[in-house]
Image 1 (cartoon, rainbow, N blue to C red):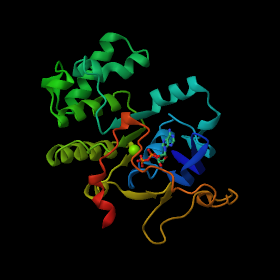
Image 2: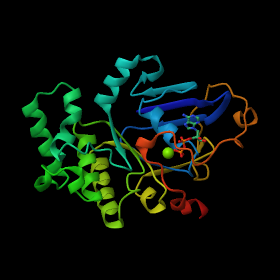
Image 3: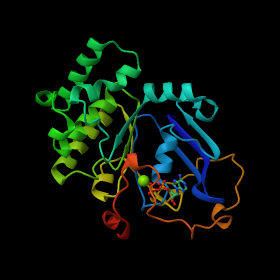
Amino acid sequence: MLIELSGVCKDYIAGTIPVPALKDVCLRVEEGEYLAIMGPSGSGKSTLMNILGCLDSPSAGTYSLDGRDVGRLDDNALAALRNEKLGFIFQSFNLLSEYDALDNVALPLLFAGVRREKRRARAREALTRMGMEDRIHFRPGQLSGGQQQRVAVARAIIHRPRLLLADEPTGALDTASGDQLMEIFDELHADGVTIIMITHELAVARRASRILHILDGRLTEPAAGAWEPAGRGVPDAPPRDTVGGDAHIAPQYDPAPQYGGAPQGEEVWYED
Ligand code: ADP
Ligand code: MG
């Protein structure tokens, strides 16, 4: 089992009021799975991604990644774990505008202590794999959205992560670039990379082998009978939404601008 979340809760404190963003989330993901998570704005998607990506820790419950209890690791160990096992892709690409594609892609290897020539050779290789070999010295501003996202994918996979976390990866792309990106995801999945992707688009979610929904901080698997709570052995927590209540939560609030919150208008999928 690559990922095991058990009874995970996350409460933010807004002023003095606790805001329950995740409520008793249980999730098991096998190595090599391709998972899509759908949910409306404010439902807890970015909070869940931050926890899965070891960027934030749960208020309660446990997270085990590749057999290691993430809650017991200190900041250095967490950073090492992120550098070694995780790749991130964001809606807004998050490339450094003053660097060219090659240097953007090579960056994670700098943190991994790889020498300059080797970094550049591997970055070139990753960009070639993304069909970007003729754009390696272009800066983000000189590339289309689709091309920027392919640079971002090259950066995310340069250190061969086991787990790829993508928050609305097609959100800023036109349909053709989005399709191209989904083909790249299919290839990575076929190579054995585990993928967890947040999306508002049902057509995109359907590329995954499993779709989960999140609503009001609760994660559910829609297929009848398919959902087996992973938190067996975890004592039942009191229903959290009776403790705080969500009425005070502004649904548009996006705490992680680096993830580029999706505009409300894109959320039509949830109506069908
Ligand atoms: P999504 O990504 O699905 O839009 P988020 O995970 O960003 O949702 O937020 C889930 C809930 O937690 C929202 O109600 C949001 O207002 C609240 N929230 C997120 N981050 C913070 C924070 N730093 N402080 C207070 N409330 C927060
Ligand atoms: Mg979000």
